[in-house]
Amino acid sequence: MRVEVPFEIVKLEENSYHLFVECIVNGNQKGDLVIDTGASKTVLDGDFLQDFQDVDIDQQEIQSSGLGGGVIDTQMVKIESLQIGELQVQEILLARIDLSSINKMYEKYCQRRICGLLGSDFLLEHGACIDYSRGIMSMG
Image 1 (cartoon, rainbow, N blue to C red):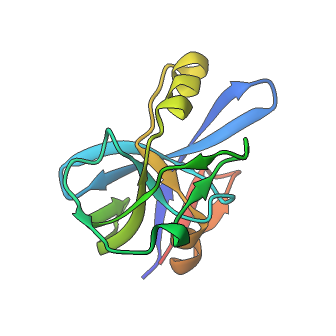
Image 2 (cartoon, rainbow, N blue to C red; image 1 turned 135 degrees about the vertical axis):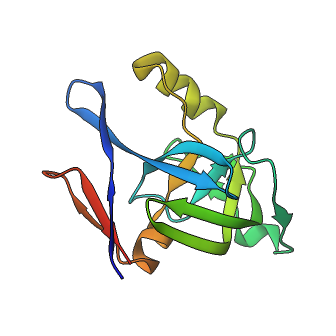
Image 3 (cartoon, rainbow, N blue to C red; image 1 turned 90 degrees about the vertical axis):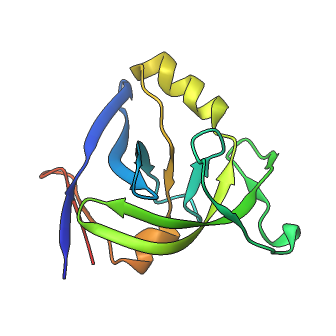
């Protein structure tokens, strides 16, 4: 079954936009994710994520890097559930990283914080289609 999830187009600067979608983590933590088709993995901010299970993976396999080229400390974790609109995924594996520098940018430009990035791993697995004109992402 396909679900349609509304997203918000947030203008950071002239001709600079990001897509925010609401999520619920583990049934009780609400937050905003940035739909990031350029991110290979879905990640949650270490400060946001409270309840998770460590996953034993070789750390060299999961090192992350941003556009700035630096390596970001990354921890692979399993969470109970991630819900986006009516789509709820149980026992999902994702990365836990420090997004404080990204959140400083969002606070500066749009007075918002994010809880994570919805990456291409999730988008591909769930067949996401982004309709910018309608402000809807369909998945499922």
